Structure formats: C-alpha cells, structure tokens
Image: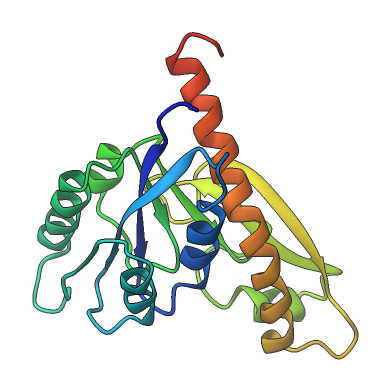
Length: 199
C-alpha cells in the first residue's frame, strides 16, 4: 500500500470526531494516519484519548495571545509533526486568514448542519425553529469565510416529532462519525491520485 497521508487533528473538547477518525485509521486500507492531536485547551478530553492511543499531542491555551500568534504556534506544531492535512474536529476557534491560506485545499472541517444552511453555532435549534424536515452534517474544505468552503459530502438526518436540540444533536453526531472518516479518506485518495498523475 502507498504511504499514508499524515493527518493532524485540531480539537477543543471531547474529541468524538477525532475518535471516529482515529479508529477508522486503524483499518489497513485507510489512506491517512493521525500523527498529531492538538488543542487550544490543555484539559480537552480528546487529548487524553489520543495519548492513550499512542498519538502525539500538543496544547497551547489561546488566552492572552493574539489570534495570529496562537495560530502561528499551532501551525508550527502541526508542521513539525509532518502533517499533510488538518482535520478540524470541534476546534472552537476562528482561524486567521494566514493560517487558512497556508493549508488551502488541505484542511477539512465537519459542521452540524446541511450547509449552506446554518453556519456558525446553534445549528440544531435553528433547524428546529425553521420547521425543517431534516438536519444533518457537512464536511467541507476550510476557507477564510466561516463554514463557507466547498462542501465535499453531506448526510441528512430526519427530524422526528418531539425532537429537541439535544436529541437531534445526538443523531447528527452518529452521522458525523460515519461521514467524516469516509469523506476524508476519499479526499486524500483523490488528491494522491492527482499527485501520482493517475487522477
């Protein structure tokens, strides 16, 4: 098998999407391997899981730092780990334009709505308030504009009678855990094919 693409995951919390990527990467045919899990919160539970699974971690709190300075520290850590791609997995920071530009076409995010609907926060509440029949999730390339990059894949999740934001969120999270590893793997394979002249 060709050498796996090296992936850094940025997170701020429990890291359930990072876990989905990590366990998908244990399959022999997975085209990526996680080389670093980094966070702006040293107490993020996702870091503990990564450490337990033998993956290098890095944390630097953002408090008291200019956004561009914090991004530069995170960027340096990711590059030092040799990462080819970045996956944002609940990273609750808006990234500076310079950081985004440096990883253009190589940084993915998962967002809990059917983009372009409901960019930003409180996506499930907004879907319910709008009377939508479905919520869902989207994997997209990261651009300088919030939740605005090209959408690579989506999964619709039916909204049930009596759903609230928590119950809908729980089902969308299941969909996220399926969609993110599959979409990332397909994207890496496609780019590898182009790089080899096969695509």
